[in-house]
Length: 190
Image (cartoon, rainbow, N blue to C red):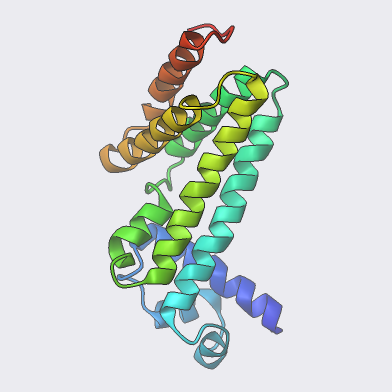
């Protein structure tokens, strides 16, 4: 197995195990077994578990934000694109493997002792906030404070869905987002 394939196999295993069981509950030997990559190669690519966690979060951020952007781009109306964020979240929440926000989960486990994990969590949240901001800008509505309010609403829905096993949090958050947009003059049905 070449280095690229080994890295991919390790990150695939890390994503499944870290997201499914938590970072601290998963050892490097678990990653080795699930990936089929030797322990020697694992440590060549990721000399410390923290580096593997950071790489997992970075890759997951890219995939998560691309999937969201592709879903939103299927709509032509800029207001519907904003609301599509909440539709996409609702679909994610309903996935049987949904375990809440990977970045908050990792931050909760390691953020106090791992500046790299804390930075990955911040980067993801700031990136998501920027994505929402661009969507609001495209509506022509005043961005501030609407984009921040929508971001807080989305983040609250993610936490609620994860902690309370509430797949309907996305739908309720969408309704609240529609009301926020309508209050700012958007032609959306509430």
